[in-house]
Amino acid sequence: MINEKMHLVEDLFGEGLKAVPTRNGFGEGLVNAGKKNKNVVALCADLTDSTRISYFQKEFPARYFEVGVAEQNMAGIAAGMAVAGKVPFISSYGVFSPGRNWDQIRVSICYNNANVKIAGAHTGISVGPDGATHQALEDMAITRCLPGLVVIAPCDSIETKKATEAVAEHKGPVYMRFARENDTVFTTEETPFEIGKANLLKDGSDVAVVACGPLVYKALVAAKELEKDGISVAVLNNHTISPMDKNAVLDLAKKTNAVVTVEEHQINGGMGSAVAEILSRNYPVPVEMVGMQNSFGESGEPKELLEKYGMSVDGIKMAVKKVLERKK
Amino acid sequence: MSSIHDDKIKKIEEKANEIRQDLIKSLLEAKSGHSAGPLGFIDVLSTLYFHVLKYDPKNPNWEDRDKLFVSHGHIAPAIYAVMAHAGYFPVEELMTLRKLGSRLQGHPHRESLPGLESSSGPLGQGLSQAIGAALAAKLDGKRNRIYACLSDGEHDEGQTWEAALFAAKYKLNNLTAILDRNNIQIDGYTEDVMPLDSLALKYESFGWHVLEVDGHNIGDIADACEFAKSVYEKPVMIIAHTIPGKGVDFMEFKFEWHGKPPNKEEAKASLDQLRTLGGKIKSEHE
Image 1 (tube, rainbow over the protein chains, first blue to last red):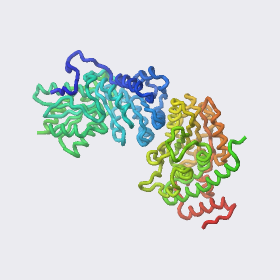
Image 2: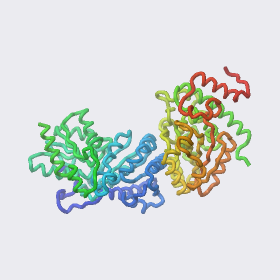
Image 3: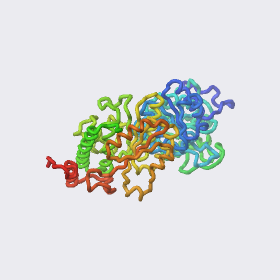
């Protein structure tokens, strides 16, 4: 059953749903945050349009700083601004930030407890034709291990907008990841969003699918199709990777005794790994992981790539059936 | 005309000598840490803390304070010794350096010790943070100045040059950087490890106003910091030529002393030299 408290769109599986890149929601949310708080500032490393930080630049030119192709310097400048009371958002592609400036994020930002927000665009295999160099598939692994750093992977453009506004209010460093492609908008303005609180979108009793990012929608579609096979699947939108909503994960595991994790990220070290860490220490159950299986990506259309690497509706359904086998 | 009186120079020189002695004692007690770099930069740090910077040790978060970002965090023992003498914490606390539970971490941790503007150690990160503070000060219309201290060795790091480009682009005239040019790094002399000269020409070509001083001449350091305030269109880089190990003859100019503390005998010999100003006066101490 779809959870009505989540206020998802009415015709959840209809043909007419809008598709918008999650990064657009970031651009809109950042403008709203900038209107609310004059201390919000933005920096970008030569990717102003594609990260959508251009929306903020247009609205607040004096609070926008172009750093050039220099992600390490950008992270450091933001740390210095944050310690002086600003709320800096830094943006680039996930492969470059946090990819190229991890030590600056670790020491200048996290060890300083600097209130910096790191926005990583173009994450996941669905970045598509640019190929493996530009597909961030390790960003959650290298950020979720940093003490005090909040890590968020929103599921659609509306949730990204809300997350961006919440992140601006949150005191402390945050990493958020976005996708490049048009992704189905299935939440609404009324859908709740709270950092660190996972949303149970659909209840179920046989298997729990714990997902993050735009693949959450595919998980819902897979769950609906599996109902026809008599399999009852719960879907959890696990948008906050760190600190993870441990209770939400454990409650579902106890109810279903079988878990499938779904993410556009390496299965080693990602959201699924974090779920497995919680389960293995508290309530061990069989887990299957949908995500990149320890390989680099390649060029191709987003849909082709998601299918080839198993991050499709069919891939999720197969993982559900596999974990059910193991449950028996 | 000098920006500092002779009697103040003399007082700062005496203070720097006292600080060097406390530094040696804290390194002996810690049994690890860096010797040469900290000794070499004490005259600059003393001039900053006892003449140049505006701050209040009783209110370290005073909004209009000048801010000092020391990028080469391995000179932490020197920063701590100067801060103790500036009134941030009791001098006795220097003996907790690098020990479990101490506020004086092996490399500076901002969250542990009030008065530190940043955590540092991994090289190349300080100038960027100082730039962030300078930008924020400009946005807020503040008149305070931002100071960044950098080592020469960390100019091997690309981030330092990214930051140099940026500071010139945004004409950060509220930023003064001081380069601790001691010509040593862990693996040897800087010009052998990775030639850096001419740092002055490099910074000039990057769009900075460059000054060069004897990093042990208190009057010259003070004058350069004062002059920097009058440069309107550019950030200022003061290249302070320093002698690593300054004040202890067997450490001076030796890269071998970059990363180790003195043992008991070496500490005694160091303190004897410092107390007698290299044999010029008699020591009343043991």
